[in-house]
Image 1 (cartoon, rainbow, N blue to C red):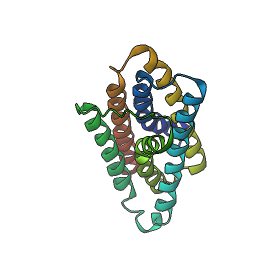
Image 2 (image 1 turned 90 degrees about the vertical axis):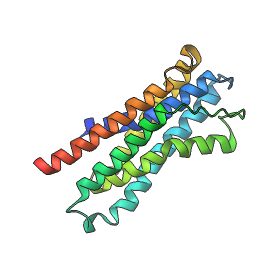
Image 3 (image 1 turned 45 degrees about the vertical axis):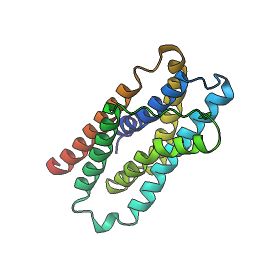
Image 4 (image 1 turned 60 degrees about the vertical axis):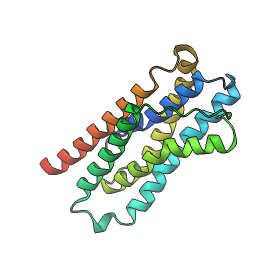
Length: 186
């Protein structure tokens, strides 16, 4: 898998982190370096780590499903993308009075934003993507977009968070179609 595709996947996955960070930036959470670092580091670590865990699980079964792996990869990416789109269109806005940069709340947010990366990691195993490069790019991209979301959230308000999740979902579905077409036409 080429670096452009990996970067597009990373951007698609990082939209969840960006949207959550944007929301946190809009909240009364402290706006200092330590808070921003804690949130961004955890989001990046969990995105990269979950991608690796998904790949680890997928690589153990890849040889058994190689005849239809492109359909599975497409299905997983389309499912994750559709879920992100559905969430972006929902009216539910959960507000947590806890500080989202500490303790269980930070871990729960980190896991919630990285569940999609688990499915993407499985997809990477099916298309034999480079897991080390992919995990690092996905984790670092998530970290950077989290920092960006935190800064922008503090300045622009909350109105764009859901739209970024929508864009991320569309990117993942588009990549799923690209994987499917490259196997069917190639």
